[in-house]
Length: 455
Image 1: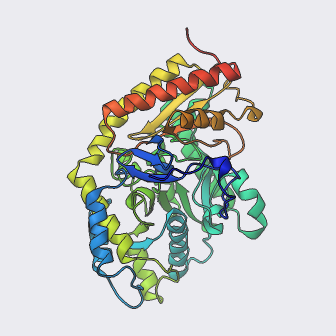
Image 2: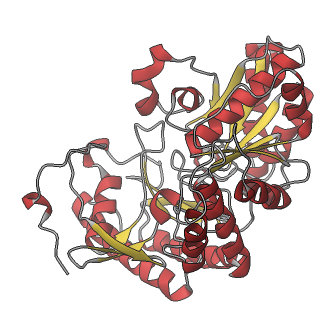
Image 3: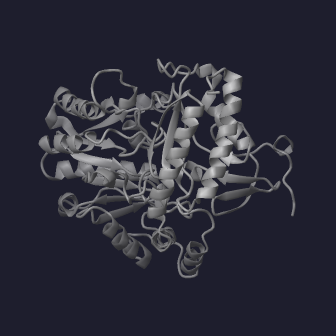
């Protein structure tokens, strides 16, 4: 087998992404592992950016895609219907809370969240409430990179450059109740954070507020943040009180990753609209979806239809992949495995937090977990940004053959974390290997940055 040259010896790439950093060339992937052309093996401990839910190179999914490729790879939705899209919509609706049975397919998470917002707005206009246009979001949060999705994203680092080009929406604080230093219980804190939504609605004017968008279990912007249980029903109650639509961004937390099909299912918190992507296609094809009830869709259809669309919406090849992904999730019992292995992973991460006290919080659901690092665990003083603790930890893990995820959690500017979210096929032995590598990397990081370690 030909080996790729060392990164520094390769030609300059014509591609550009976040930086000029070169990575080795991928050769193949299988299960939770990925191999480079120079022979190195990596554990995909974050499923890419929390995408590869069912693992890499699943033969049944590849075979289903091949069968569809032999028939048709593209059919524009305005010209033809296709069986994979119809069947995927039917099966997906059956897994969602009752009534969320109208599906609109897209190609990714940003398209999905933006589609939710556009559906909400067109519904308000169709029912004679055109004054409703504001979508309240949380800070920090992340809902996508297109201008529409970015407008409802609470992240200064990502949004500041583009602010003059979009309508930035109002925000409320994300429910980071673990940081609060008061005499309230966690349940009381959860209620307080939810009540901040009502305060914002009243400040903006209820007649102008269209929707509230949130991740039931946080993604990259909050490193798997989970609110106190009391938060979720109070949010639903407030939205109902003011006639505001509740949009759940389940792009990262959906499709079984948290041990339920939707993250919101842990609290029986039923949204009005749901955005799905990432694990829905599991990395086999670009795929996302909007799910809504007929009570929201019917007014749009009666007024001329959903004024929105993408070229690859309902693509037969992507939908064939998604259909096979759902089939493999059921056949292999992956949602149950995510719940069981998630408990093991959480226990192991809490063990690391005892060993490394600079890990101030461990949180998450199922196989969507995160840990936040600070310089002082008593005062929660953050690690100096110049030390780039998150990136250094990710690099140390990568050098040891493990991929984990992380970014700043305070609006993309401050705060250090790492996320561990392996594919839902992960075993106990593989979790042990992941934790061992993270432990080694944390040991080095603590020594380099003079962070506290238990003897």
